[in-house]
Length: 253
Ligand SMILES: O=C1O[C@H](COP(=O)(O)O)[C@@H](O)[C@H](O)[C@H]1O
Image (cartoon, rainbow, N blue to C red; front, side, top):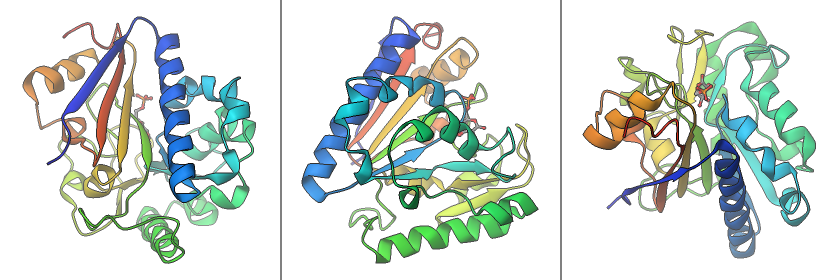
């Protein structure tokens, strides 16, 4: 059975960031000790700002960054240099400040993304994951049959979307593919690729971080009514499904 959703409300965004860094650092140490590497999936959006504590002491010096392998739960289909790119956001705000080997950072294909071919980008990203399964970087979960990442750091939009799974869009129902695409995202830019729900939920530890007032109503819909029309309400995990909120995001609870 999937673990129950666990919620922690922090007085401020700063305290949430501290806790997220500690959570990530502890899992990094655990998995590196157990299997010699740590697979981390990032989302885009405000989450990257809240990762700021990881690039400060004590974490910047204590984490074994060379053992990290970094992925994106979703990506906008645009050039890497485009201000919309989740890769650019993560590089500038986080990844360029820590010594993770370039070869361990698995971004969307640069040229296809610049060409704007969402379907092809999704196919290629799935192929990349499958190659990493062969190389034994990513295991296939015996329980779910899908790739098993160690930690996924997620954010939620005010409309309740997570990754690029949006309300009233069919991508949430995809069960065959590991990575799918959307060309009519209600949030710009319209073309994106995204992990599918079974892959998101096959992750061992999922941490959903939500701050500010804008998503507060959706947070309440999920926490109080388990409103499954909101994609984030479907979030689960193999070991832990933890939601970190600041006071503003929890204000409608
Ligand atoms: O478009 C996206 O939105 C969500 C939420 O972003 P936020 O700016 O509201 O925090 C993000 O998690 C996702 O990765 C991104 O592509």
